[in-house]
Image (cartoon, rainbow, N blue to C red; front, side):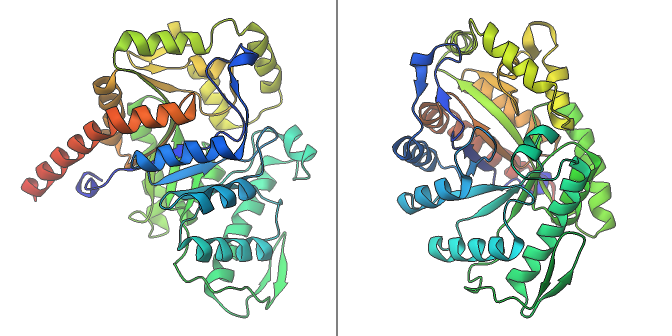
Length: 367
């Protein structure tokens, strides 16, 4: 994908599941509020980021409601709204997507997730089996895309049956892009068949390179090798100096024995391949996968916890290793999310643009 590096697509994360400057200190928690979410989004927008991930899960505020209010207050950034199978009927979901897209002039992407555990899925009314949730998720994607692009759709599937429903308004700004993050064979298969972007959680760049090669082979079977892009879901801790960055990283997770115990207890119910890999990576000595890839957040947080830590040049260089591996984008986050977005935009984004410009010039000379 070197020839495509005239643009690096970068998104950020809206902390509807909570924001803080220290995991162990209740006084360091930033109250969840529309005001804070808007601040995070505006800082990311000012930083030049394209989209904002709105998560869904037991500890998150409703993704669609939060994204709707934030999108009304921001002008450019596109909400990447998480969608779980079985939460909303595809006909209603298609209408929501169409209305949201028309209200925002096409500012919407969809993030497909199946959930991290059977216990949490059942508690929220989803199917218990992860395999069944993925089948349902794929059926929803297929049906939603048809409902948004065709009239008089008739569908008779394993989970849904519809007969010529009316879906309004018409989708004026084109199909939203579907993102999917997951390491299981089912997740990869859905990405190969339906996604615009496959999101990897933090890992070694060499591992990501091999995974991209494998997914490309699968996507090629569906004539979609050129339709699927790859991005990294990572945490970021960047400061003016490397020492400042590591000081904050260690402060963030200091004195978190209780939180680690709670995380370990929750992990017993999680059967996600991606989460299992994060747990495996967290065992590296000192939490350092490389001099600037750190797993410390994995000890206190479920999900994508690998962080890029360092000064601006170090952070940019580490991210560019993933670009060299075949990624063309990043979905990032950092604590606190408003401040880290501002730092990243001011200190790292210009360096990434310089890297991409150099790569684009090199590629143009190689043609």
